[in-house]
Structure formats: structure tokens, C-alpha cells
Length: 390
Image (cartoon, rainbow, N blue to C red; front, side):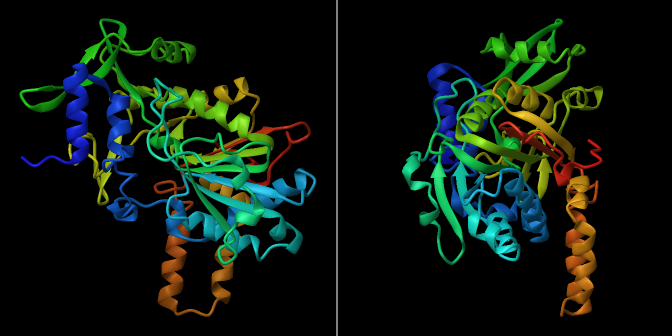
């Protein structure tokens, strides 16, 4: 049977060490230079799944409204950095920059938009990451922007290249792809899921956790999980939050992703965890097929993300549904404006359907939006989070 280079890499790791953590397996599947799902640019990501930014440019236009308020709260600095981490094909970056050009000139001129490709390192070794060498900080400047798109594109393995940022760091559907450790409750104790081989096939075994931080995370959340419960822990959140705080001098962090607060995430509705895989718009729960050719993702633990932020000086100022966030920023006015555009009835209806997908609770509307701030005087009501309904 012909194996992908990524699967062979995984088998070689197992042969060397006897087994690997699921986090290491997931890291390799998604980010291996040998052809991981996100490292192989010929995968055609949009043929596997959709995102809010792919759905309709109004998503970026509404985020631009929130950025404008943030710029004003910061005192209208002459350079306002927007660092989008995990920018992918740049669709969201372009829609935001295009929208900013239609806003007050002083704000549009202040925007320095950096679209950063990013891959997380292994959670059990936060300082280790695969792939690109990080850009140096002196390359992150307004003068490096492409004059046509208004966007500066960089590749980075972390946020070390960014320092003394005044503005906003934006993460859209990023953290759900951080490698996770999987666990199971057996005999009343937390056991970790390891990946090994048996009879030539990839399989799972349970053993003592590879890191004490797995059980510490679950204990800190005050969870009483029943026998047989299985789930995931994202240990990479801590290092990620530390990087955010180090990069940001004064400003905001906006995280948009699918996930829940810990009490809901680790509830009896998710007794087998939340891990899902996407391959050409087909959903699967088996990460051991289509290795390197399917996305692997888990819901984000927003409680742990908020707590990590507090430990690193990032104060939570907003948490709500994406539907509420976009509504607060003027979604209805954009929807009404469709009637004034010069397009056929068929195109208008298609655009309306795409826009409604962003706020539909069965689609992207149930995604969560988290706002955190660093800096005195910024702990104020943001437009997107009025009447919060998480």
C-alpha cells in the first residue's frame, strides 16, 4: 500500500520512540514540511472546508468597523498595526483593507496590515516549531506593504518577529488547529491517548500522561468527568498567549473561532471529545485516514484562553457569538444595502444567502468572538460586544 510522505514520517517516529502523543501526530499531519495539510499549498484548502472570510467580504468589512473604533480608543495613532495571524490565502486581509479604504482617510492611512502565515509548535515543547524561519522585526514596517493590496505578507513560526505593536492582533479560525493532547478517564484517573502501530496499522493506546499539565488543566477547570470520558487539551494556548502579550505593546486581541466555555466543552454532550476532520467537505471523526490530506480540528476552550490571557496581562473585555458581534457592527445595514447594488436578482439572492450564513446559528453564527486588551484606559465597551450573549 502506497503511503504518503507524512504517514511514513509518523511511522518512522513511532518506530524510533515506540509511540508518540496525539499532539505530535496532529502536528505532523498538519504542518510537516514533507506535505502536511497546511504546509502543502497545493491542497486547495477551500476545496476541503469553508470559513467566514471565504463566505462573503462583508465579514471583513464589519471587522473593519471594529478596528476603526479601536484606533480611536488608542488615540488615533499615525500607525495602527493589524496583525492577522494565520492569514491563509489572504481573503480576510483583502476584504478588511478594501473596507478600510472606504472609511475616513486618516484611519485608512494609519492602517499597516500584516498578513502572517503561521504554524504552531508542539504543545509539549513550546519553543520548538517546524517550517519557516521567523521574519526579523525590522521587516515589519509600513513601508514594506504591497502598494496594490495594502498588505504586507510574512511567514512566521511564532510572534517573536513582532514587538511593540500598537493596534490589533487578529486570529480567525486559528486556535482550533493547534495540536492537542487527547485523554481518557480510566479507573477514575486521567490517561493520555498515544499513537502507535499494531499489525501494521496505526492505533491508540492509553498510558500515564506525557505532561503533568494535562491533568493540571482539567483540575483547574473544576471538572468531574465520568469513567470512559474522552476529550482534548490544548496546551499550546499558554505559550501562544505569552507570545501575544510580548508582541503587543498596547492594543487589542480579537480571536474568532468555534468552541465553548469549559463547562460546556467538557459536558456530557461531548463524551467522546470534539475532534473532527474535514476532507473535501466531508466530515469524519477518524484522524488516521487521509493522513496529510485532511484537516484535523478541535473546539477551542475559551475559558482556558481567557485565564491564560489574565496571567499574561491580557484583560477580557468581550465574549459573544459571531452573530451578535456582526449584528452590533451593522450587519443589517449591509444587508439592506444589497437592494441598492446594480446586480441581477439571482446574484443578489446568492449574496444575501452568503451573508446570512455568517449569522446563522447552524453555520458560522455560533462561532465565538473573544476580545482582550493590553494597556491602561482600553477596558471599555467595544462596539461588537454590546449586549453580549455568549
